[in-house]
Image (cartoon, rainbow, N blue to C red; front, side):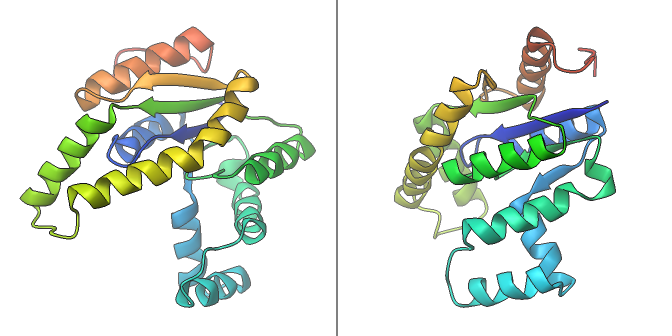
Length: 199
């Protein structure tokens, strides 16, 4: 099945868990920029060496290099029949690059899944997890700051996808199975893939 998707959600909304289920259901790879960076660094590719220099210097990887890495990854065999992007695109320029890249290959995104979650509930969830795991650095202030950064960064990107009619919003709170069920129903309603609702 050919499905090209993007998943977006605040830290703590269970995005990684749902991404794995979606990728398995559709038989497509989950492509995360973090994983791409790590793989290129580990394999000491030319791109990886450039990323390592930037990261070691404590700088952000620029859009141009991130775009190059994603373009390279999307041309691999397992991604030719579809993919689930996680963590990219993060900026309006990256959205425009991805649109042009896919269009040049005769493709386009099918949908952007946004996991919505009440910020206070996420903060409660992550604070509880930090206590259980003994992570003193994960204070409520730090968690709230990450939520704020996420919201500020993703707002313009989400607006672009909303304008294109690609945004599907699903409540990310509840049990893992409840959220998965909501996702399947939302995909069905949008006509994305022949998804059976029984797991």
